[in-house]
Image (cartoon, rainbow, N blue to C red; front, side, top):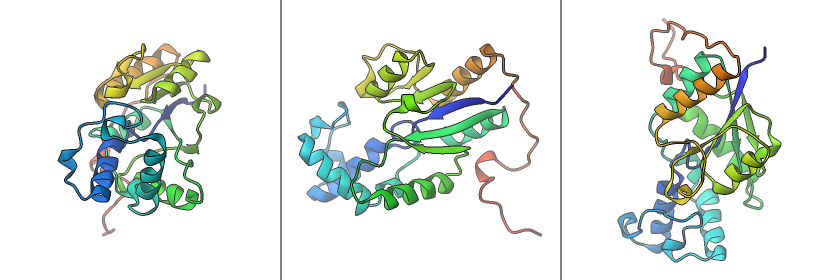
Length: 214
């Protein structure tokens, strides 16, 4: 039997997009980030942004502030993905980051640098707007429209809890610990044998950053 494939979104699931974008908007406005309320809507309307303003600021966030390279990681992400990878789960990163015209090279290179810098394991990296076009056995996503599209094709999808997706009716997780258990349950139910973790001395998150050989 082939590996169980987990499709994992980045922004709002692995990376703290709201905090990263808040810092950019605050810098552009010359204010402290604390003056901006927490994100509640998908398009940040609580910050007084219309669609054109959002797209302009997001373009600057990606190209000028290099947000995709410096975004904070959501706690537990890397460690959990390493444990899932050790258990035989194939990690497929699926993200829609190529919507900034003439900025694809920066978006792609900064995404890869961020994944490597945070020691996040993955077998495949897909830049796709329509997540339903990328085959996986189960998905973790935060965007309501992505969840709806995946549900429409009968896919197993877990909602990573965010303020803007509270109305979505689907299994949800508020932490990566909950993600891990849901994925293992789905893989087991699909008939996959969960492998025992490899007996490694170092912490999982340091595997991509080994020290000097002695």
